[in-house]
Length: 352
Ligand code: NAI
Image (cartoon, rainbow, N blue to C red; front, top):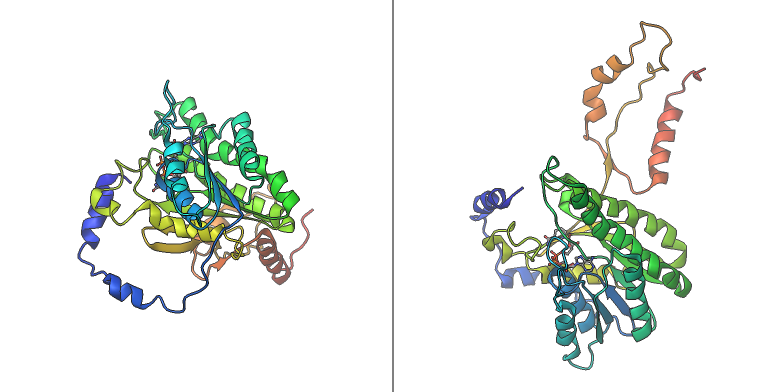
């Protein structure tokens, strides 16, 4: 999807009447306690601008000490001679605030390098003595159609999004395990969930992060480490030539920050889940599994020439491919129990 596609959609929905702020606020009754992060340390990668900056400002405003990491390069991940001191600017914003705000330190390591990832976590320990929250957010873009995509374009994008999130998580994992507490947030994208023209590298890395997050949620459970994935949508440097100006006003990066802060809070019990935050809309993504069909006529090849196996798939394609009556599957155990139920309901001769 390019900016023209998005603009067409915006124009289509422009006439929809939106509730006024007063109307919208009518529904905000039943206020809960203020959620704070006093005494906790959050490490945020790629937080010198855009979404990461907003996450850092919000967490710090609620008492968290934050390590603002950003390697200060271009959108495509080049660093050139001079690094932009973006992380310092964010830290200045935080450190000039009132006393109930946490402290901030800047870090300029690249998350995609093993030493850099370790330095980042060492920096958090040196200044604040613990790491409670890790927001893997750093990212670059190198969009090209698959035919034109170089191996370097593939490697760079996968290195920063996927390897970077792996390396920083790996560096803070022993600390979180030892303190028996941790909150990790990975950052995916609709490009990963649905695919997007020109983003084979980015989409692959972003979808892989969901697999990483799901597994860390399972492995972290006994140590009280939670891991979730966010799918943000926001106007930032990354999307400056993709999101039209009109829509950008509705997609402020700061609007996504409360979702990430909640997933990072000790009261939030969610783990291994995917949440989207776009503008002021928040929702959950999940995998679903079609009802499918058990085909007892399927057999090993070759038994005899008359056996219809491929034909059986073709003839039952409507039921196999249908998502009507689909069920949500949350875990491998759930997946297997559905399969075993099918086996139980369809006793079969044991194949030789
Ligand atoms: P942004 O370009 O404004 O910020 C990303 C930051 O990451 C930059 O400041 C950059 O210098 C930093 N960075 C890049 N490589 C780094 C490295 N190796 N080490 C440390 N820092 C590095 O982008 P934005 O929009 O704030 O994106 C944040 C995350 O959200 C990214 O992972 C992006 O893929 C993801 N995302 C954003 C969407 C959007 O609509 N803005 C949509 C879907 C996902």
